[in-house]
Length: 106
Image (cartoon, rainbow, N blue to C red; front, side, top):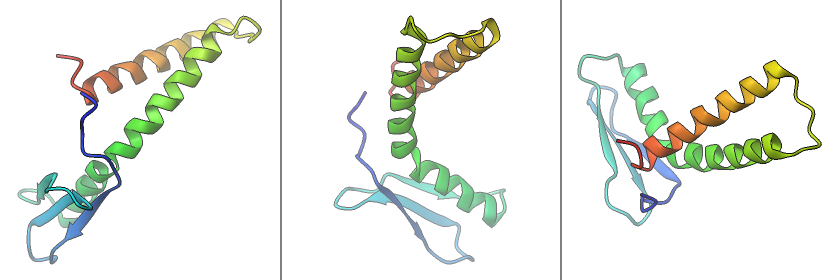
């Protein structure tokens, strides 16, 4: 799945007394509503910020994992054992997150 609505996504805050925060993109239909039911207004806003940042985070994570894979495959890069293990683990975490975000993981 790489057909998500392209970013940037924007947040539309209604009023602090209202529990509606919507997320959308210019020229596209509504992407999501975030409800403040059972959470504080600050948590409500933080959830909306996280959702709205999703396209940028996905794009960045794809770039970072590509760079990390290239660094791990580079024969002139000298990793010690702990560094390589940490880099491999970070790469796998990144790839898992990308697969989850793109619907490629069940």
